[in-house]
Amino acid sequence: MKFEAPLIKAQLLDRQAKVLIHALIPQTNSIVPAYCSNMSRLESVYEQGMDIYLSKINKENSKLKLTWEIALSSGTMVGVNFDREKYLVNEAILKGFLPELSQYQNVEMSDQYFDLVLNNGDEECFVVISSVYCKKNVSLIYPTCVDVVNHHMMNRIKQKIEDNKKVFLILLAQRMDFLNVVLSLQSDAEYINDIKENLSKGLEIICLGCNVSEEEITVSARMPFLFK
Image (cartoon, rainbow, N blue to C red; front, side, top):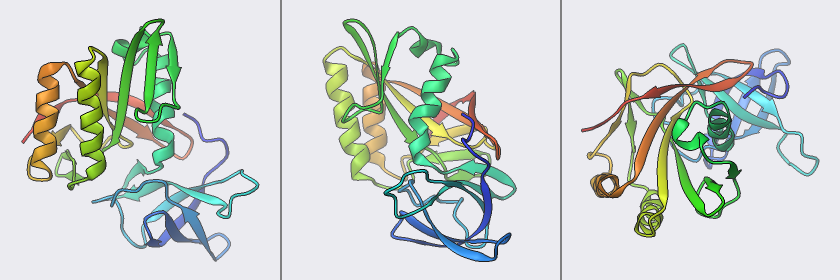
């Protein structure tokens, strides 16, 4: 997925109420607010003073004019814009990168509970996309905390599986500096046990890494996942 216009390099000053950051643009020596679509804590990514990249918001009624797109974390570009995830996965499907999902002819992105709904007439497939960011050594850790949203999501997955529907959980990392994704009981044992139960009943998990640059973000690798 190519960015619509050149990104603006800046330095991160602070983050407020999760959805708002302030950044310094050295080129103009100006401090600007920017939207942060990622509601997670961005463990191991967020650091005051780090280099970041912003994109312009082209919506007339928007109070904020910029969006936080990329963080430069320990020399690695990491995409942080949650709103791009559906489009990254859909692009990967259209390119044939995910053969399990490329067989479906139609893709919808407006479902209330699932990120993507694919279908071939009467046959449906449901996709949930979860962000993975927190890096420890060569692994990304998922989840990083107890999140009630994850538990609601897993209940909806369970219901679809009981209705004999195909369901995929895609763990998406907008970075490529890792070797695997570790599903950690220490972070939320109940949630991980629910994942294990749904895996035994038909849930499929795919872990994806992305190449990130100032020009584009693309899904580029499938990574293994481990239980720990």
